[in-house]
Image (cartoon, rainbow over all chains, first blue to last red):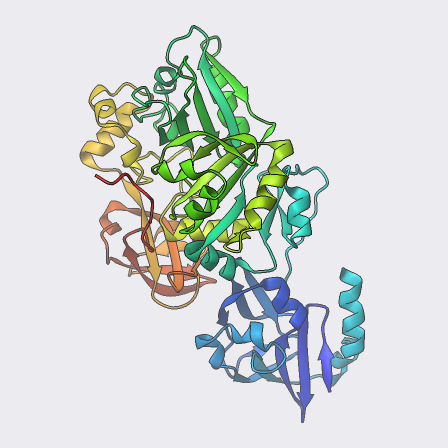
Length: 123
Length: 381
């Protein structure tokens, strides 16, 4: 199940684990990404907490935990190759995986069609 | 993720605004103007393009003026009262980087002063966009009845920067190849009389072209027709100047910092030091002699995390000793670079310091600037 937040993050939910990244729209708005700071495996976050930082040449932006849960894995490749977020935001450029503690939080999120409509409305 | 909002109807537009929008420029508020921070190429590629070929920058937001004395004497002699550089000695067509001082010897702004070819020795002066209102007020207050300012608000300013700049501009006017770094002259480009200076703020060879505003779009379009030329936005302008260790007014120094602290002592003329005939000279001469309490230094973070303006600098024990004034990622350098003020005990190259980024201490070292060599076209001796 693929879900999107209004903060331009995507979550791929499989077997109770959400893989989280930022969207194509987000990477395009940020521009050339030069640094990613990831959370620690095992850290717990509530929905909306700052979980990671993504820095473009221009500025730093927070990446929020889109759900409440614990970090189970991080994409260590991004430390050496942050540009993967630009080249493959929805795949190789994922940020972290986390448990889904409260599946009711998924209800407020958008599906892909809904998100595409949402960003079309921003322009 | 968080987003930065941007919209303001009261912002000014340069004569090239429509061209930036048509070129896909992302327009942001800067110093009261809506300016392109980047184009579809992106900051990284725009930066590299400027270092490898030629970048075209709209710097029309900067303040251009002519300055003359009211009584026909040398206006440079008047400016020397508040600027420590040797300006009165400037010959026609020669320009100098200098600083506008306050009574405490602090820097209100940095600027470029050029002697024109006009018989009365008038000066062509370019100041920073964000400081122009303040600068003009200081000059008008202090030199009322002595100095006449003619603001050139009907002129655009284009900067063409990079190793291909000479070849590109010489196609329109071969004589620009004869200018050396920090020289300017009147040149006809596409039938329009322009003031062309061989200078810039990217560390590369290049020119600044002062052009009447109504002619600016056509000249810009002509320059952009060259395959080697691309529009470059403010984002890359900032990373280009930071890599070559050039100060940004209001960030790398403010009205409290002296030229000694800010490391721009090259702007203080030798005879001017001996004479001490400028405001704030007591402090500045004392600092030249015995050193300032703190100084602006280059800083290289050991890791990959950029340290941006405002990040605190700590010693190896964790005591806060200063702050980053400019910092980010250097595309040509290939890593994070920064500048900031530290007490003199920490200003030696190689000194270990720490940068407090989002609450965590990151190791860094004091480093010499420029981070990337400057490549100006100076006169061959």
